[in-house]
Length: 220
Image (cartoon, rainbow, N blue to C red; front, side, top):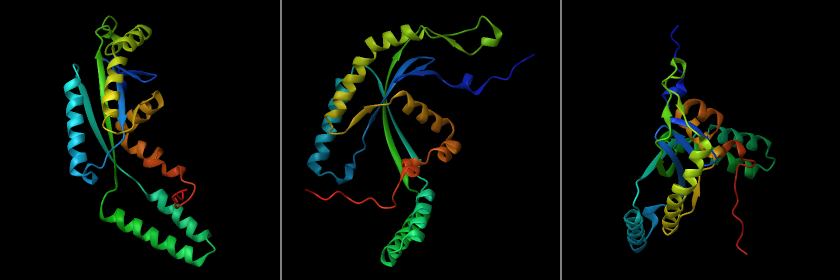
C-alpha cells in the first residue's frame, strides 16, 4: 500500500545539532550580524563600510550566502497592553498620555506595515557522506549519515571559515553572533509555518513586555 510522504521528506534540512544545520548537501552555520542604518552614516562612514565589506568578499576563498528576511510585526498585543495600562492608571495626565500614544501606534500601523528585518550570513561545507537511502521502499527520500563524524569534520573544516567571516564582519563595526540550536529551530519553524509562527511567537517578543513604556537610563 503506498504511503503519503511526510512534509519533512520534502525539506532539505535533515537535523539541527548545536549550531550546525545538517542538510542533504552538507552542513551549514548561520551567522547573524546586527543591522546598520546605512542612510544615517556620513559619506565618509559609508565609503569606509563599503570598502571594508569589499575587503571581506575579496578575502574569502569559499562561497557564502547572504539572506535578508523581512517580517511584518504584529503590535496588537502591545496596544492591548497599553489599553490595560490606561484603564488601571490613576493619574489622569498619564492616562491621557497613554491614550494618545495608543492612538498614534494604531494610526502608524494602519498606514503602513511595521517591518522587522534580519540579516544572515550562511557558511556551508559540502559533505558527500550524506546519502539518501534507497535500499528499502519505506526509507525512500530519507538520508543516512553519521552525525558524530559529520560534526567532527565540520569543526575542522567549517569552523575556521565561520571564524574568518565573523572576524571580517566585526571590522564593519557590527555585532556578530552564531545562531544556536534553539535559535535555528525557531527560525526554520517560523519560515515553514509563517501563520502559526506569527501567532505563537510575537515578533520582537511583545509578550515579554512588562511595562508599556521604556524609559532611558539617565546618563551618569
